[in-house]
Amino acid sequence: MEFNLAVLFLSSLLSFATPCRRRSDRFSCSRGYLTISALHRLCQDKNFPYLSAAAALNASPFAFLDFELFQVFRRSRPPKHSLITSITLRLADMLAVSHRPL
Image (tube, rainbow, N blue to C red):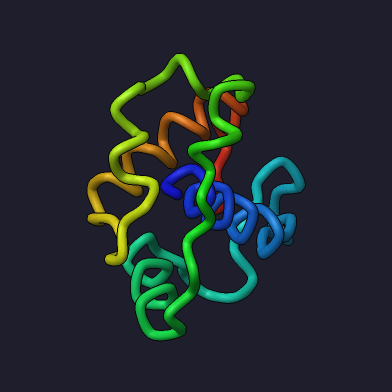
């Protein structure tokens, strides 16, 4: 579940990013700031169902990261901000996303 939210967060950051007018090597977010808190509230307000990824995790390249994630996949409440942040940062490092939109 946290990986799904992290992927949503990173993909929304990258899809909203546009090249800066002054410098072509920098990107900025064209739709204002999207924060992890905003993603958390969006999932809470819309009551998005969380995907159950536990069955697919064994074949996943993410399986070695944290075996305790199995306990959090089938929750009824949204995860904590700190957990989403941690997973997003780890996923960004794995995907080599080092230049985030400003």
